[in-house]
Length: 101
Image (cartoon, rainbow, N blue to C red; front, side, top):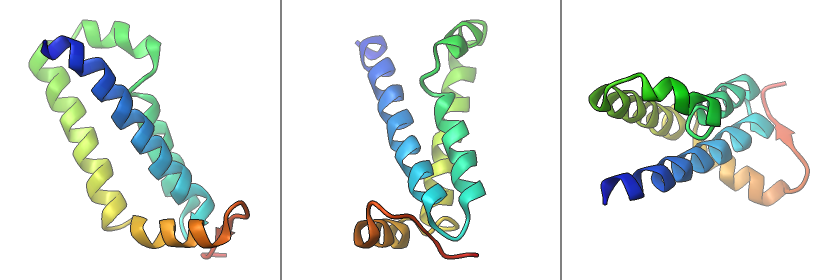
């Protein structure tokens, strides 16, 4: 049962992290941080990574995914000020507003 839930859950977090990276790239003051989050999110649902993950043990895969997920959520909420950027995005959509330049 857990194997059936694991892939959709991983892809869901990949999509969530892609959204966070997208918002940080085009709205706010640090587009490079957003690009870094986008690159991390690609790791969660890229087919080529599946072959790499098959070589790792189950505990190592779980630890790496948990660490990446925790890092993205923690950094986007605190350092990335995600709630402020979502507010800016809603107010200015579809036009970008990079405030650091």
